[in-house]
Length: 100
Image (tube, rainbow, N blue to C red):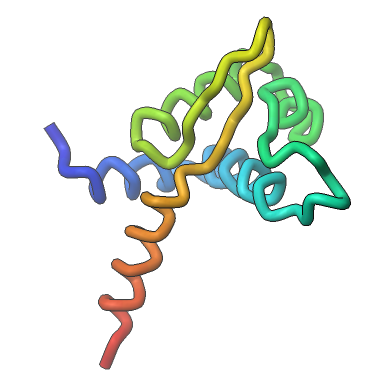
């Protein structure tokens, strides 16, 4: 229905989803010595934002649908990993958009 960029912008239109995405990216950017895990779990995100896990799951589902986040299931845990490819697409869009 929507092109990929529209889907990404719609997902980023909600401030809670942006907060969730920022936490996921923060985990991915940590240096290996500081955190051996380049992902965030739904539980960690919920705890950090002080909101219920089902709400975080809904936000993450929208980010997954927009292809900004990937989920890997390991046992009962849902590991949230940012999509570097689509983050690069967003960056390139804004670089081109802001070019004089």
